[in-house]
Each structure stands twice: as structure tokens, then as C-alpha cells.
Length: 538
Image 1 (cartoon, one colour):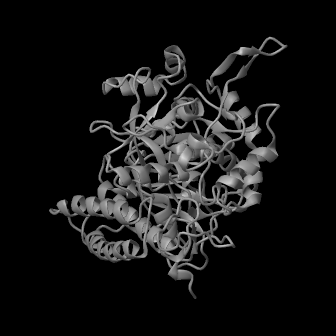
Image 2 (cartoon, helix red, strand yellow):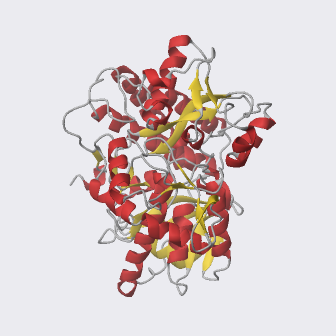
């Protein structure tokens, strides 16, 4: 039997952005935080590097802003960059107050007897400004925030809840466009429950799972982007998909990212013969922005017909490597690779969705009552290429901003009255789930082959043809059979894939993460790619 739940705020996603927003809201509000798997299924837990922020006296807001603008290929919105960077220190201070165990720098004791936090440097940054917890920053942040949320009686943390679609006034045939809640699959009961809320927040992460090779966990299916699009929200710059240059290349190493901080501490990229190659592509060599490094690796792999390149930090003292990168050291050791003595085989993999649901500085989408924060959103911070460690910062800054905006509106918004429940009367149990598995595999393979690091018009046309056929098949399947997590994710992935392809076809230039052989030059004027849902064409 399906159920109906009412909350003040419904947060779809349990990562850094969702938990930060829930913890920032006042304790008298009833808040539900949904995770479609276990609570630690999101990308936050696996983030290794750290959080970029202006924390050192030698660093400045202007420098961080300039670095971000330079990395963004001319497409960053300067107001969004400045807003994020100017609020970086207070976001870090808040995390420290929550108890996040950032790594301290014991070598630089302050005059007052305390210790400064250790700051590292990553690609695109001109200063050491990455605060971290060894090489497992995401896990440290997530565990701390989750611990705090579990102590708040007003916050319900609900696992195995898969959001199916948003409920809006327009969807119900009512005047107005406000978001009223969401339909959510309870995987334990198999029923689709109805959640009504004064405010709904999409904090679902990105869509890197649309590609065959990715550093992301299995849940990164673009759910928030797809749901928002279907509800009537604009999306922006979805052609910019960041491929992390260095994921561990090993048949048993699923989705293991080798943190960029290794290169920040002197690791070198080499060919199988031990020769460095990055200086041939960029004067910043291994510290060039990720798009340049990923394309260089892709170029060398195709030129030489090799399966991977190598990341070598073995020239550094063994104790230095073990103390700074314990997670990478231990994980590689399980595959027989001692990074203190030998290089790490690496390949690029889909890592981050720079575009997303269009929002303002308070996280507002185009639909009243609906917010999007974190990787689900398009704030304008990342432009055509996200600079390392700016993503977690964006989560905290915009989550706190959205929470403040929700607080300012509380008096004007009431919990919606009872909403109609999910209608499953016309569907049956599927006996052909093999279709889902086949379509999932086909989608991710042609996205990797045709809409990957290097694109062409012909490849994009092929991808568009295939994704339209898949969308028709999925829509028919969705209309006739009961929903499951696999079907919901496939439906969302296919929708986001279609938006990525459409966005890529509209950009007739190479800029940042979008590189096409048909338009290798960069246009003199940078413009965002904004797609508008057909329901608002009138």
C-alpha cells in the first residue's frame, strides 16, 4: 500500500549539498533527506582531493576568481564565481565547526600555539588553497555531516528511496507552476509513495554514469536534471562533461579515481617507455587544467595504440607518499601496485557534469518552490571546464544560500494539501528486464564512442539517432510496466544523454571540455547553451 508523507522541506539527495542544506535549516522544520541507495552512495563520499578556498594570507579572492575564470574557457559567470569564492572562508569555517577533521600542518605552528591546516595545490590553481583530510576528504566531510544530521530529530534520513518525478501544479492541471512534492519509489515495499512539501531541493549529483567509463558511483544518473527538465526547468551547458585525467586502469578497479593532488605534489605523467609527454601539450605540464590533461592522454593513447599511460610519484620519499595519499596507496596495493616504487596505470574517465539545471545564487530553478544545488545545478561557476576542488565548495556555498532563501519564505508558504497518489492501475510486472540491461549498455557505449573527449558532427548525429530510438523504447516500457530503480535510472540517463547530445550539436566551436574536430577553433564570443522545455514554448 502506497503512503503519503508531508514535510516542510524535501531534499532529494544525501551528499554534501543535501546534508549541508538540511543542517543549515532551522530545527523546527520537518525535513526529509532521501537517498536512492544507502546514504553513502553519492559522489561526495568518494571525493579524494579537497575543497578550494581562500584560507592562506598569501592568497586572495581575486587570485582564486582569476584562476577559476581562466580554467572556465571564457564561459564562467563572473558574478557566480565571485559569489562562491567570497563565501569560501565562511563555508570552511562552518565545516570546521561541524567537526570535519581536516589535515593539519604540524610544520607551521602559529604564534598562538595552534596549528594551520595543510593546504595543497591542484591543476589550474596558482596558490596552495586546497584544504583536505589526507586523500579522503569526501569521506571525512560526509561522515561528519551525516553524524550531525543523525543527531537532529527534525531530519529524517531515508534510504532506498528513488525519486520518480516531481509533482507540480501544472502536472495536476492546477493554475500556477509551483512544485508541490515528488513521487518516490520505496524499494523495500515496491510501492510509489507521495511526498508533499513546502520546498523541494534537488541535490542528486551529476550524470557521469551516462558514459561507459566513469569515476562516479552507480547512482550518478542525472536524476535531478531529468526530473527538472520534465517538470519545465531550463538546463544549461550540458555539453561540458569533465573527464578526469587519471582513473586507475585495472580490470578489477571499478571507478577508482587517482586524486589530482598527486600531480599537485609532483607526480609525473609518462608513456610506457618512461618518457614524459605533458610539457609538449602545455607549459604547465601536469598542472594544466583537467580538459587539457585528459585530451593529451587521449591523444597519446590513440597515437601509440596503448591502453593507458602512467602516473609516477615513486621519485618522492616513500613515507611522504604513504602519509599524504594513504587511500591511493592502500587501494593500489590491493591490485599489486606499490606506488612508492612503480608508476600507476591510468586512463581518463567521465567525472563531472559542469552543466545542469539553471539556477540563480539562491539555488532557485524556473519553478517556484523547487531548488537545485550541487552538481545537479548550473550556477555558472564552472564555465566550460570545472577547476579542481571548486565543486565541493559550490555545494556548501549554494546549499547555505538556498537554506537562507527558504527561511526567508517560510511565512508565505504552507504545506500543500493532500496530493493525488501514484496511479499504477494500468501497469503490470515486467517479464522483460533484459531490455533495460541491453539499453543501458548500448546507451553508455555510444555516448563514450560518439560524445566523449573528442567529438565530430557525424558522431553526434549517430548518437542522436540512437538516443531517440532508445527514448521511444523506454517510454513504451515505462508506460506499461511497474517502475524499478533500473528503469527509472535508464529513463533519466537517456533523457540527459539526449540533452547532452543536443547541446553539443549546438556548439560550433571547441571550448573547454567540448572539443570537436569539425570546429577546432574557439569563437570570439562565449555563449552559454540554454535549452528550454517544449512545455514553455507557448
